Length: 273
Image (cartoon, rainbow, N blue to C red; front, side):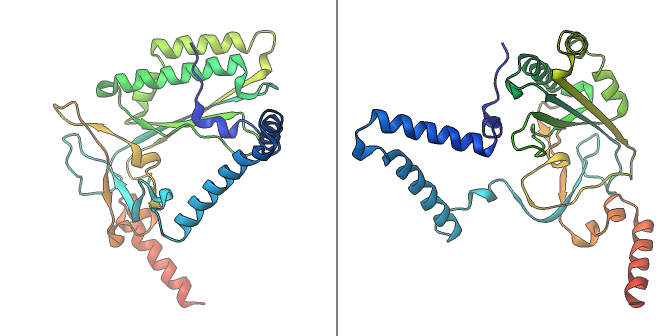
């Protein structure tokens, strides 16, 4: 069975469509409830939302938008194979796999072919998670929807792998072969253009990647997990807050020489202004 991701329901329709849904619900209440109570549901909903907004804005209640955020400016440091912290930033390779599916059907993301492919994507990640101890899989981003249209029908996620060889081996897993064969069949059938698929692969050798974060919930490289040696537990990356260490792109890549050169150029440019 293909399950529906209800976390994405708010993005299924455009704003005018959601307003129409609300208007239809109000009309239904007007016809079924006593006249004096017709606007009670809308009034209660509006009041609750307004009170919650004001309470957070005025600091009366806890700001839910700060939930799980990591305060301050920081970067990530990948652990060594034994779980210890390395001395140098960016000293491990990383492979990134971006995969996306798009519905070009009037049914949007309710299109059966789209939903089947999405189900296969979920199974791919389940397989990767199950075999994490041996396959080099480090984790993935949550599914997200690009906001290039008023209603959205494109779903994208990014996964991360220790090496490009680990990612290539993942592509030869039975579930990937099964999903690929279904995709070929769908895109050579009666309506081949109703579903679109994309993938992009990036491979960064040591010293050629970095990330900087500030007051964000964990995302991307921050979400990665490594299997602890001789344990079933997982550990995340080390978090580095020292501004002297994480200052500058080259510095976060572990290249102190290039960072010094960049700072020297910046100083010279500032002096000439």
